[in-house]
Amino acid sequence: MTLVRKNKVTYWTATGIIFLFEGVMPALTSHTDLAIEGIRHLGYPSYFGVMLTVFKVAGAIVLILPFVKGKLKEWAYAGFAFTTIAAFISHWVVDGFSGQTLLPLLILAILITSYIHYLKLETLYHRQSLKSEKYVISSLPQ
Figure 1 (cartoon, one colour):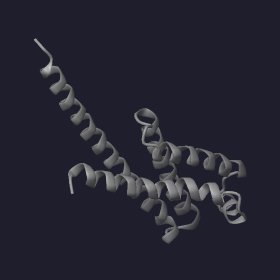
Figure 2: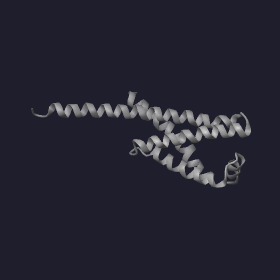
Figure 3: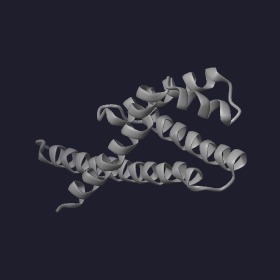
Figure 4: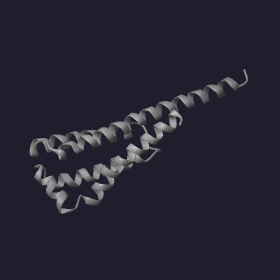
């Protein structure tokens, strides 16, 4: 398997998991009594859950669309990093250290994996475009 292919498989696997956990699941479950109670239990107002869900769904869409690149994708990664770190801290402060406290860190590790492989793929694609550009320039008549 080539380097590009390995990076693509790892990137899309990690990004797909993030899309499901941070985009699809909140969109489908944010209105349930359990989710509303979870936000209240952590001490956040009810509107925070709605706002968080909107931003998570938007960020997940940005991450999963391959034609979205650059700063917008970077901000989506940053937003998810902030929310997972904040979730870890919130659960730890309110409930103490438990298995539920570690779940945001697992999501953060998957997010970091996605981000690292996103950067690797962008670098590989940039190098390939430079090589093809160099070929085109060198083949022009002098």
